[in-house]
Length: 181
View 1 (tube, helix red, strand yellow):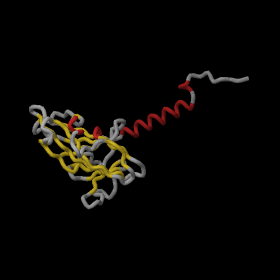
View 2 (view 1 turned 45 degrees about the vertical axis):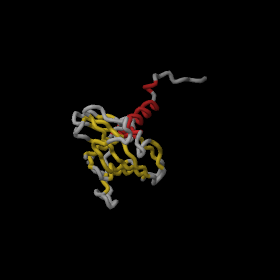
View 3 (view 1 turned 180 degrees about the horizontal axis):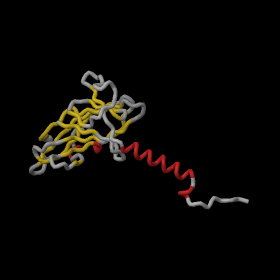
View 4 (view 1 turned 180 degrees about the vertical axis):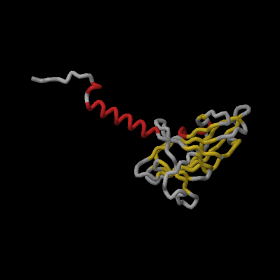
């Protein structure tokens, strides 16, 4: 005779194992990752230990999640070579040149939309549609092991606004770094 367990699902032992695994996964992925600054000579400033630092400066190489990310330059009031591409009144284009190196042991995705800009009012916005008109745009793709991609992301902000650049490589994660000029 086949006896079926008629208890509700939440009273079964395997249900609670799944709940614990899911909660652990959510909690673990919600922890903000801290980057390690790599000096210009390639040595880790913090002896390869993760630091509590989440804000960085232009030119610093930040190592986290198997990648090295560098904001190489920020060009305020950038002008397009295309005469029809102009910033709106009271705004300016900001061109951010970035470099990403895959130091992990698997392929790594990159995307223009991983980058955002914060203005003086605290509004955090994605790239301008102009970002795709430059011949050196970052675009999106995959990096092979030890692969490198350098490119630019264009933003539009209020003229002379104090800015911060945000890099968050996954929509599903709270892991991010902030770069200040």
